[in-house]
Image 1: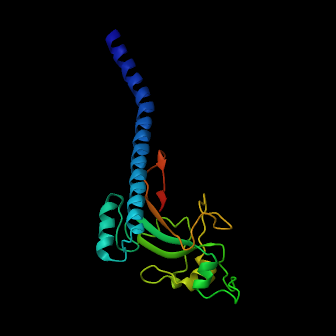
Image 2: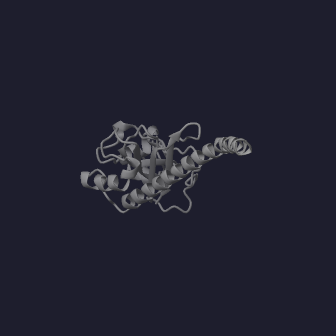
Length: 215
C-alpha cells in the first residue's frame, strides 16, 4: 500500500514540476528562435549595405537574386510585395550651399535661393527589395513619383521637394545644423532589413525583427 501511495505522490510531483518547467522551456525556445532571427536580420542588413555602398546595382535581377540567397532563411523574395522579409537601401546627402548651387538654387551672390531643403538631410536614392509591408523605413519614405526606376532622385527634388527630407524616429547620427565634419557632397549609405518574427503566444509576440546600418 505504501508503494502505491508513494507512486501517486511521484505522479503529483511530476505534474507540478511539468506545469512550471514546460512554460519555461517553451519560453526559452521562443526567445532563442527570435534571437537567431535577429542575428540573421542584422547580417542581412550588414551584407546588403556593404554591397550597396560598393556600387552593386540592385535594380539588376542577378544582383537581387544574390541578395535573396543571403536572406533566403528569412523569407526574402525578389518579387515586390511577397515573402516575409524586406531590405531597404538608401543614399542620403546633406543639403549645403554646394548642393543648392548644383540644382541652380542660389542667387547672384551664391547664397541659397529657393533651396527649401537647405541644411537638411535628404534622399538621393531609395531601393526596396522584398515585402515592403513588413516594416517601413525608420528614415522615412520619399514620394514614389520622384523616385526613378533605378531608385535615384534628381538633385532638384533633393533640394526643393519637402517630401524628400529624411527623418529618423530614434537616434539620428547626422543631426546637425551646420554639417561640420562632413565633407560637401558626401553620400551616406543606409541599409535596413526587417523580417517577420517568431510568434508563439503568450511566450513570444514579436511582430518583426529590424536592423539598420550606416556606411
